[in-house]
Length: 275
Image (cartoon, rainbow, N blue to C red; front, side, top):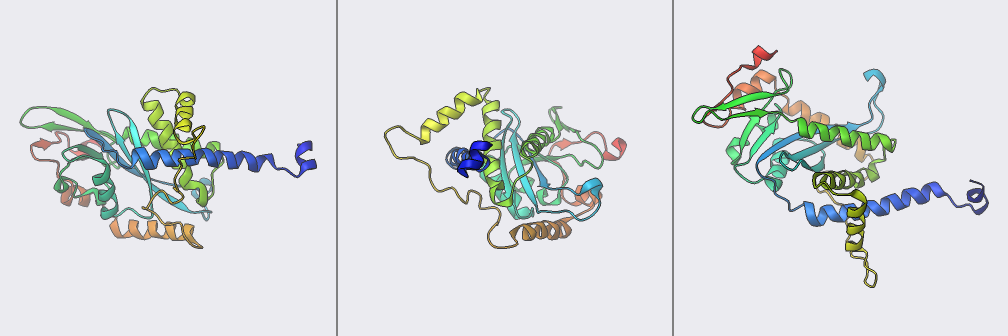
């Protein structure tokens, strides 16, 4: 501290700068290795809103809130995250088409924007959290049973929230840089790798001893949200609230008009029996 005062050199800002330099490596990893990934098999999809909460859910919330879409491959536990301005059908289905192979089973909650996934070439199964957190489906022809839930992606939200709590939150301008770090940590853990070894392997991939740095310009990594211009945070929050109001349906309406299970599948227990 004394040296910092004498030299007018702030070690805190230096640590933050180096952390951002490291996250630039993770951003490049996502750009090179993740954006072209296609999951298959059983897939879980969910969204969560990140942002500061008001104390005891009272008063005015400060800061913006951002929706994050998570896509998890159940067999590998790997997750892909995207920040989005709002969550209508065209946004969510586009991300699913980008990262999930056709004919895969997709487990979702009862959000109405997922209503046409069966028509898009997937097998969709839903669990409506107002009634239950897991739901069993049975194939009427083969007797095969599957249990629908989104527990894996819900667990990923817990890890992400822990990450942001550990740094006491972040500004909107640096929020995007933290998502690649969260994904990279998840992918290393899914492969049972050592984070230190994997990090230095990744570092050597982009910083070579006798060659120029191979990091590209990933300043704007995700094209699914807008943070440009003054008041972007308020715009994102308003987009979320407007889209939610436009898309909201009651659970019974969602079940009746949007979410028939794939052909030959049925749920032997009605949701009302699990209330």
